[in-house]
Length: 154
Image (cartoon, rainbow, N blue to C red; front, side, top):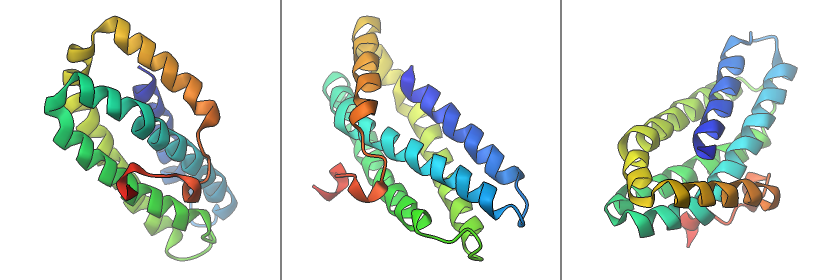
C-alpha cells in the first residue's frame, strides 16, 4: 500500500537524522527538507483522498480519522516551523525529535489500529484503485507546509 511505503520512506529519513552529529548541520537541514516534503505530500493526499474514502467505506473509523486530521494539523505546523529554522539553532534537533515522536505515534495508530479495518471494508480492488489515485495525486500535492489547506482548518 502506498501509504505504508510513504511511512517507510519517512522512517528511513528519521533514522538518518538520528545518526547525524551536532556538527552535521548541513546534512540535518538536507534531511529535514526531505522530511518536510515527504510529510507535506503524504498528509495532503491522505486528507484529500484516503480519509474521505476510508470514512465512507468504514464509518467506524471516523473517530480515528478525525484524530488523524488533528495530528496532521499539528505536524504541518511543526513542519512550517522547521522549514524556516536555522539548523544551527539549538532547538532544531529538539523540534525534529518531537516531530519524529509524533509522526511515529501517528503511523503506529494508523497501521495497527485502523488501516486493517479500512482494508477489510474496502476490499482489494477498491484499495488498488485508491492507491493509483493517491499516487497520481502526489504530482499535484503541495510541497510547502504553509500551502497545505488542511482539513483541520475547515
